[in-house]
Image (cartoon, rainbow, N blue to C red):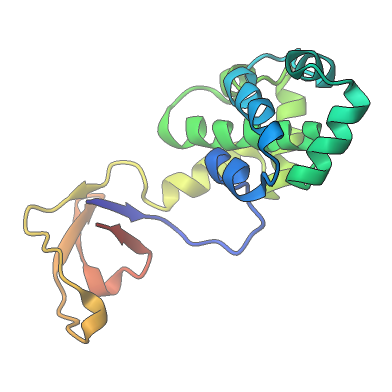
Length: 180
């Protein structure tokens, strides 16, 4: 069982890399391109030329085929995937933003900040603070946690989450998403 505590957002944010590929790919011949991007996104020199030569298409043909199948240009998809990976590094590590930018294939922190802000409407430093304030870091599950079905009308407050040294009742915490 995984318990996830975080702020729900209505912003237009980047989807996970797996869901990007699974949801948007309607053409089986594009799957190797998506896999290639996932495996090589950290290469700051990755471009349409290299991707096209990998799959054996011309740049023009790949660009057209990819846009038809995925709904985005190859470059836009690559940027979305890089931002998805950067968000993971920002959320779960303490690496400096410059290092995150370099690890995710951006040549400069300025370009990274501009692209990140374009997708998330907030700079990466502020996004990291916002995520930290949401309580994702340092969450532990209380030993008294019970996996009860709250949809059947039984809404008894069970202390399940200890965040920042405080125990929070389940019913007071609507942001909890439980997977079983």
